[in-house]
Image 1 (cartoon, rainbow, N blue to C red):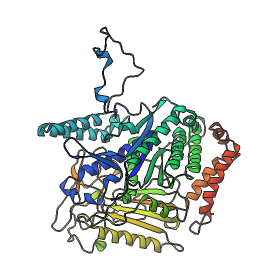
Image 2 (cartoon, rainbow, N blue to C red):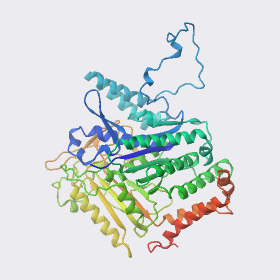
Image 3 (cartoon, one colour):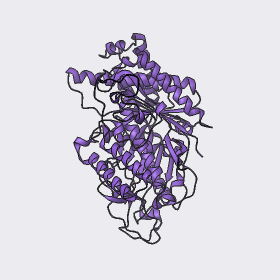
Image 4 (cartoon, helix red, strand yellow):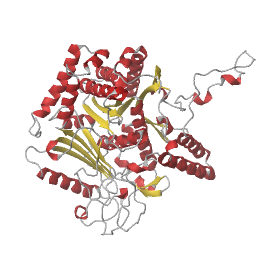
Length: 577
């Protein structure tokens, strides 16, 4: 059994990503009870990310092992307090000695729950009631609500809780007092450090991490999903500094999440905001890389849609890239997963030849395992159900992958080390590819890539598991490679691809995915550009001084970035010194 991980979500966009991440875990757990998925479910240990307990019916109930921090008002109409549904209504009277009228004044009306969240709760109530007709009606209403998320612009979630499918631990769900969603200026590095409530909340977050850790016999490490720009960057830095004091020997991966921004204008307010954002990223990279075992900056590519869609894409990438940390050696009808690892080994792989920065790319769905790699398995029944709706062969050329780290390249000659995860690959001959077939196909691609470059080879770790991506109803349909296959043909001797329910589509094959977590020498350009923004003659000097960094401090930040860039510039794999 793999050791547990504790997840921290620090910031508004981090929680949009985190909500999708937990929905993916929740759907995978739920699907494990379905016939098509039951044989594969043993390949993944869900207790790595989730704690479990028994519910009142004796069933297993999972809860994210997470600590969540956001601005006040960012939870929308959802409260995770167990007493939230039973609080007394002061307007109703009758609770105390006063028998007269009561008038309630509120600063702002309470946010209503989103339609999808309301239907989720109604479906859960129907399941508890046991009435088959009511349950079917609730399921239909939930699917309609999910379909509106994807097709109706007006139905796009206003809060991340509007589509969150799980209940979070109340004590570990924190908000910043006095800093309100949509009202507070939070676009500079300084506000969080200047606020005593921020410091108190950071200490409370670390205390919740300690409480989670006390429940674990052995802790694998920590992963931090953080908005690393603006006030959240400073807040997250303070939390990571405290975590390093409390957990000095544990691996910590820092997912630096950045919302897609419009191109900076030539001047005015938009240009100043863009400049402050770039400075925040530079300060974060300089500060946090000293503390984190692995630093992975993520930005959804252009055209990914709004915050709801962008967050889903990043969550799918994180989910796939961290799957090796949750894999087991249990046998399945498609074979046992290979390449499981732990966070400590993963960070040593990626930072062994380079600084502790990594880029992420995701291919969803993954390409098909070619017939040659399948060794004729599947009986050559062309046209059988293949997951993911892709007819292209598995490839590492990057033409169909989404690069989720801005400013870098994953060209073979720039790759220093890499962790690849191939999950739920489908065979071109039809059905689900076995682990052996998928591994042969992936190894062939790695060998072909290595032949394209001379010099030192890229150190590659690969994990292959037969478990596809369990997309929840709320996952944006357009992100699964432009659609999922609509027809499923079953053939004798072919292991079928597990099915999913998708809004407006009925049961469809679950897609496979391929992720690449890569240490690339092209980070040299990113680091050099960040260092230039902090230069003495740069326009950002006055801004960082406003954030509390004096001339000497700014020079130290810049020097760290140049030292990191220098480690790439002298590498044999980098042609651009």
